[in-house]
Image 1 (cartoon, rainbow, N blue to C red):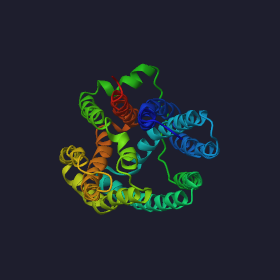
Image 2 (cartoon, rainbow, N blue to C red; image 1 turned 90 degrees about the vertical axis):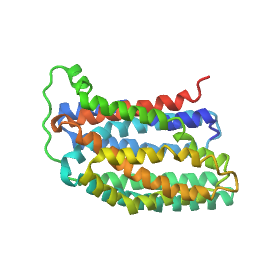
Image 3 (cartoon, rainbow, N blue to C red; image 1 turned 45 degrees about the horizontal axis):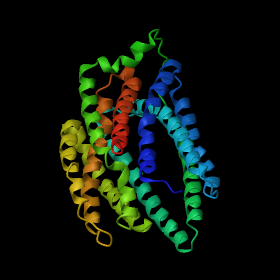
Image 4 (cartoon, one colour; image 1 turned 180 degrees about the horizontal axis):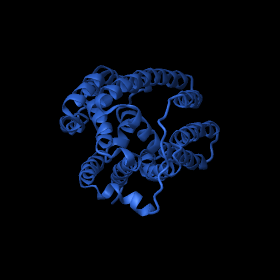
Length: 333
């Protein structure tokens, strides 16, 4: 659609800015007690609005990119409203003693699905591009994504939920600032805010770099992404076991140190000479698998059960805003 570098960076940053909607989602969940209903219906709205992108692919007017921004904003707002309830819901369903192993297994299933979809999507796009019908290829992928998203939310609706009583707080301000008064939780926030400020500088631009500068095909990008997913399949369960045995903190520390070296590897490849990236995919995939699993469990373990929804929402909002700010600072003179 002709997006420039700033617009690409902004598109990647929007989901992190809109994490502030999680505060509203948490408030609604705790006020009404309708955790499952809010999560399911917001998930439907957030995914099915993508059907509106299909006609945009066939329109040549300049405003179609602005329309895409609008769809992405609405979609992410709905998903963020669902996320706070989903995190609390899953945290209550899975016992503390097996949480690392359980989500390790879950991430394996997600990784297998991701690999299959990514490789197939790359092949489809390259096939349509070879026939000069790239727009049709994107339409096929978007339509398939919406259909699978509908199936996913139907399955989600079948997951049981423990009864959650509505909170009867009179002071809404105390509800929102409660997590910020927790000393240990404030320390956790500082750590992840600093982390997201760091990675937000470059994270939105790796895909654009592979396409524009390294001249990689969609299939090659799919293979690269699939290697990362394959490593996650192999290592998520071992990481989960380590987390259950030693805790999240040492796993996060080791993985973060290794991830900090990843940008150095990206200084090496050039167009036509990017084979080292497939080794980097294995290296970074192993570290990100451990980091993401531990980072998912840390705020859950450090939030009180009866206030978990707002704690997790506040964590996501502040760490997400840090990513958004650093993504935009790249473009400041």
